[in-house]
Image 1 (cartoon, one colour):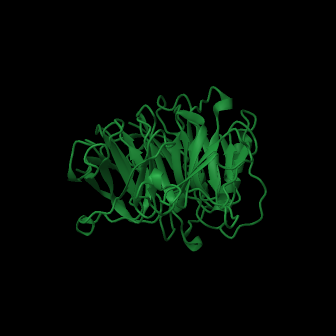
Image 2 (image 1 turned 30 degrees about the horizontal axis):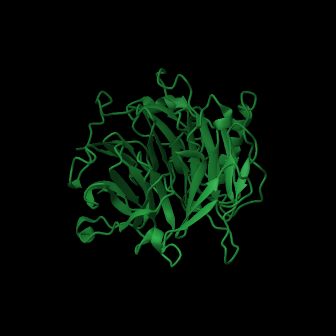
Image 3 (image 1 turned 90 degrees about the horizontal axis):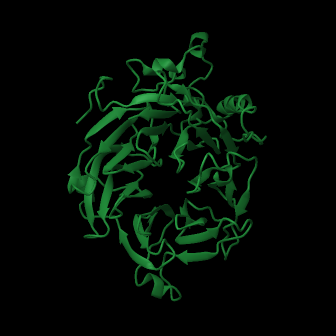
Length: 444
């Protein structure tokens, strides 16, 4: 059912924060705007300053949001941008008490010379304890980096190098081990690597191929899976799920440090009939009970739910997401609800996770952006939803960011009017292609 867009409707979230036009435009133009914001905040807290880099051939591309995630303590949002930078946003204490949406500005920004494939928060992250404010990032063709929004520069590096070619290996997924917070997993081509965060400059302390061989046959059994490990997720029972771009899922017990608990393909015989064939796994999400695994793919119109501890088969297909794109679009599970955004800028919610079988349609939806929603993520308390948007555009199609005088004076309060469900940037007018590069926060 499509939700009524009347603001009085109980299902209509309220916009409480937005970056507005801060990241609207090309990477070069928005970088200067972001730097100005960081300089303004320089007297209040330490921030990263954007390092001087040689001109990039991609500086005229749209600076869209690639993904966003909440810190474990719910105080900070980490966002990865097309400008090869990672920005952190600390939420104001008055976020939910103000009548008008807050203007969100970055607390800190860490630039990288290459695109970032994966990021991860330290599970002990706390805004009250700066020493715990650690974040991992995996830039292309470089060691894994450890940094903090509370300190300048890179704190540590962890190289992952091919044993045969000595070339850099770039992990496509990162995950801290909740049972050992100083350890983290890195997923790469047919491989899982385990690192110790305290060993700066050193490679992995253990390495587990996901394909069987004579040496690891006893561990993996007769199965195994080939392909880049593009998604990692751990459930409450310490079962690590690893998904690949080749559409396989591997399960590993003992918090990922034990043997293989099973490997299965997510391909089903009725994919063409249901339209559920995707282009590779980009995210795996466990239900709170640890029984059901939600598998998200790129170029797919829905999400698959697998009964891992029961039948071991696909229980349900959550259709109607609207995500036929090669871009990674993040989703979220909260309780028995699955939240996901689509290429149409609409957030959809499926209810009754694990309680419904077969094809399941969304229960309700609302318009959050006027562009592709690249991430849909909920505050740990479930009270605030964060969405971010944007996509790679032809440089000629990037909207002109030279706003008129009236546009420059435009306040984000206009977003809370009758069109509060849409964060259309005033800078989009006159462009031949809609662009909405923004981070929005919604009170639920």
